[in-house]
Length: 102
Image (cartoon, rainbow, N blue to C red; front, side, top):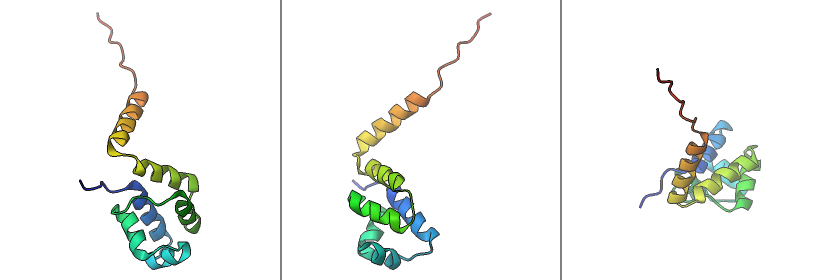
């Protein structure tokens, strides 16, 4: 089964492009290959370990906690992500208004 596009990878790509860096620019700064970074950005490869995520966040001047949170979400199995999303929606749903009968 094909992996869905990873939100972490999308966020990583946006942060890199905001700085107008190529894959090679970021790869040199964090010690990863261009191919590996490309795989992360496109979702072909899952998010890396926390140590690398922190290096990426620091290199891109991004919020480490946000990067880690998104990466951990993307590492979850799909059925858990679906359950978490459903539970969050249920918690934030407004209660039904009682209709006055007249």
